[in-house]
Length: 212
Image 1: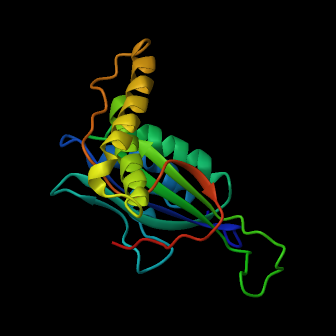
Image 2: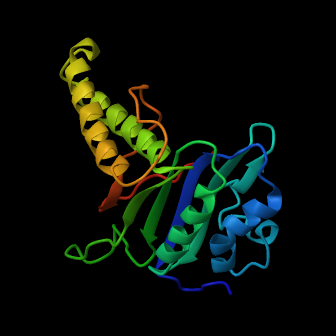
Image 3: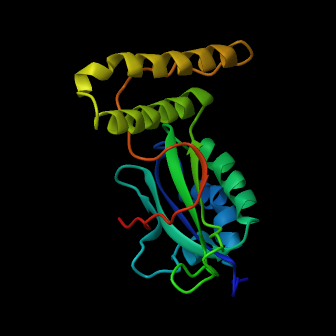
């Protein structure tokens, strides 16, 4: 059922490339944790965002891409729905992809609130993919882009080859640690940046809502 007076507005944003053989029924099942959380009875019913200007949840058949730009009112328990969604999308994804999730504190008033009060805003970067190597590849590409963008304020891009090589070494070490116990496909490789954002969970300042 809809959550009125929820402590957060939660925005989910990302594009996930899906296998060409994936059906709408499979997508609906993978996203069940999201649309059920919104109080809907189906993906078609729950794909609309809280905000009309956001496209919501869409499947682009032309390029087999799941596009998410969707907001729902909720609480901390939404994190469980996100975990279940990621597990479902892992099985359908063609390549690794990142999904941004922002928790906006609906009770916090930056202008009129107590100056000693801190916002409970939070930001998560989630990753999905057909195997751990594909997920690691996306993490690697995002980290390289973030680091290069930061360091290019002080250094020429041509000077940063050693920094990128060190990032690749760290991910290769992580891959080698995994491969000791798992068969997980190809090693993440140096393939250039793949889009903004960074891994992990970050509290603090408000981040702009994305619109397609």
